Length: 116
Image 1 (spheres, helix red, strand yellow):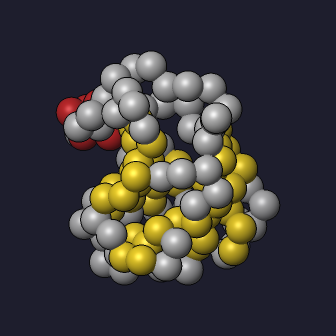
Image 2: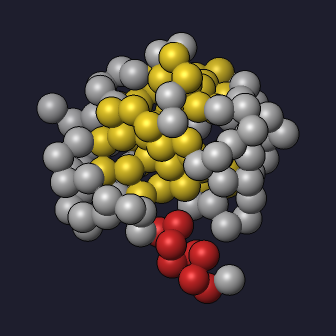
Image 3: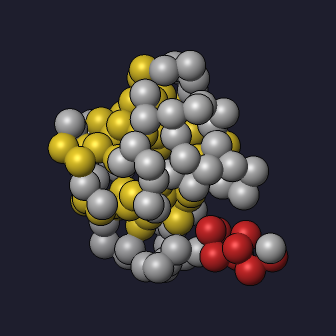
């Protein structure tokens, strides 16, 4: 169990040097208006208690997706979710993120804010 928690806190491309100012905001869904900083290089989003960002929504998986930073750019990676992860309407297992992109997890829709 401890190994799983350590793995979720440090993703496959973890660098430890995340630029300040990045955030995700729920723009559609139960948590609409919730905004959180992206201040780690690997943040797991899901409804399970081991996720870094726990959102109790039945349309997302326990470990649905992760927002990561690989030292050069931010990205979103689907973690084998049932309903998939979409970026700007396109389903993708992994996609680079740009400021203003919209990420959909189940019925939740998030907007990404990234530093210049």
